[in-house]
Amino acid sequence: MSVRLSDVAQAAGVSVGTVSKALGSSNDVSMATRDRLRALAAEMGYRPNGNARRLRSGYSRTVGMLTSDSVGRFSTPVLLGAGDAVGAEGMSVLLCDSRGDDIRKRHHLHTLLEHGIDGLITLASTTDDQPSLGDIGVPVVYAYGASTDPADFSVVPDEDAGAATAVEHLLALGRRRIAHVTGPVDFAATRRRAAAVERTLTAQGLQLVPPGPLLGDWTEQWGRVATDMVLRAGEVDAVFCGSDAIARGVTDALRDRGLRIPQDVAVVGYDNWEAMTTGSRPPLTSIDPDLEAVGQTAARALLEAVQGTPRAGVQRLPTRLVLRESTLG
Image (cartoon, rainbow, N blue to C red):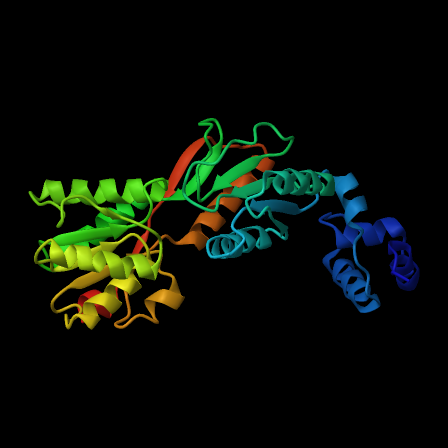
């Protein structure tokens, strides 16, 4: 049978109220008494009743995270960051995956609210804008993809700055004939990064080779196919890729054609996906969107909202350039 508060009080020879104060945040008991009763409760295996604590404080000390990223490639680092932030406050994160299904999403949202969460982080599977949930009775923060409602608060990586940083790195290396191989045009990430690439080159009086980005899939196979198109367009000395998977396909294709990386052609990827970047030959320089920081920032903003200080708008967090041999050889 579970140990009750009254069992601890009886064993210590004190009142239930004294034990409750010692195990809570009250300053009405001495430090020595608090330490003694907490040690006794731990020894007896006492665990606080979450429902009772929620009734007393008005808080469950849990926040929900609702994601549609079933693979976990992007949700896992965001979850780790959020967990670090709320864990420092003695709180927990409950993760639910809708797998991109609206019915499942509504079910999970209902379950989380029934559980009594203090707030919710809704995590998109892409950086496309995600629909606002509106007023659900608890504060909501949107992560990775911004809410469609400017009155909501969203935390996203700064993709424009990340793509510009990649191109600026190549320019600093003396590369001037740069190609951009990226993903499908229906992704906001594709459009944002491509626009930032062309703006950065235009500011230096340069243009992409071939003109405009090469649009395809987020796959190694597309990277290999696109490399043929790039090489047919003329001499290039660098390729910036919209993902690390594409970049790995590009490096394979360049190497198969006898080109040296980075001596002949430098390559930069995006996402800093370790399985791709370190497994590539050579290892890939890449833009890291710092998703743990996205999770930490979103969780801290949610905790502020729970305490009555909500924010609005979109906060764009800086990305990081991670240097490896594909540009520094």
